[in-house]
Image 1 (cartoon, one colour):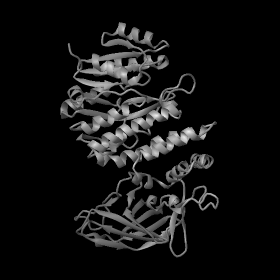
Image 2 (cartoon, helix red, strand yellow):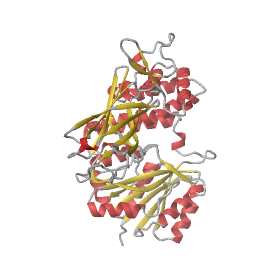
Image 3 (tube, one colour):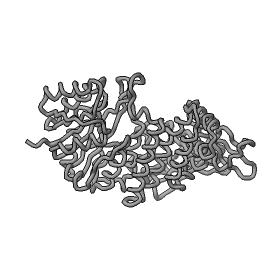
Image 4 (cartoon, helix red, strand yellow):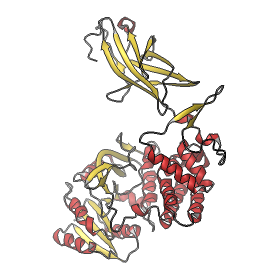
Length: 481
């Protein structure tokens, strides 16, 4: 009988982890699966572990090939797959029990071409957030698309997904050779799909290998050949996006600057010989990205990129050490008398020897208003609001703060009194609220010519705070706050 789902597992020297991976596949609540194990020329005991599972469970099938890499191994598995749906898992990772049931169930209900879900990092037997996927699945949505939900640009892995086989074949998807074979395929699948399901469940546990013994591809990512292949994958994705979805290029480039360039910096930090080949690769790396994105990078990253361009490896190492040494966010300081500019408080600012342009340190666009309602109390005559008002990354009291309530039609200014360095207090007369609502609290903060506006957030939930007084409530005393 044709299985509902085919799971393809490339295997190469993962003996210490493989049994746990295969046990997690055997324990899936979706039982109508086949698991195709592709031994990519392992030289440890991985094949023996795979043979034991194939002998004990007829849903497991083992095939072999000489060592060609994970891409060709996955393609080998695809040629053997018979399922209506396709999934991939790596032999050192773990799949939660209900993952495939959730993903396949979503596709069967919506008719989408692929379904994807959240990822956790498996570290020393515990689970942590995957920083690669940290911003992707906060708001699940069915029947969407990467051009509408552009946060999916950050979803660059193939193994937290289930694909409709008909779509896979129609799109002509196949894995290239090389280390980063999954990134181009993941991006192509997202763009070529008619619709995509984003589920809120955690569907994959991505293992961080122990430092001892043979490390994974991920953990060799600062080696020069590894970095060269990463650049090739980046170029491949950019060429595809430029042709099929150019509106995604800026988001993809920004992600490369945020995540991928870190490995290049790490390589330069630990380089003991001639850094020339790494610097040459770095220049090629930056040349592959759009100049708009390079210029709009966060200020501390711009400083690192500036030093990389100039080949200032010792100074780059100093900045990297500075970044790691910060327990909190780096600070931004105002400078100037008549005209105030806002610069990151980083090493080498206005260093006479290096003469780095001030605009490299410019952090004005990174400043954000922080306004949180700490309490809303009924005094017997009205409400007393206590609000925290500050500017993210600026360690200074905001000298000018204004508050007002708005329901979209009316605007009610509030008298503000200071309480402490970052606190303000305002009284609200409920009679002024009659006939309106719900009310949101808007904040205006001004410091040294910098003006920021925004809605006050609820200190407990993090959402926009609202004060609602129904028309039948004259005093508001019966409204829980």
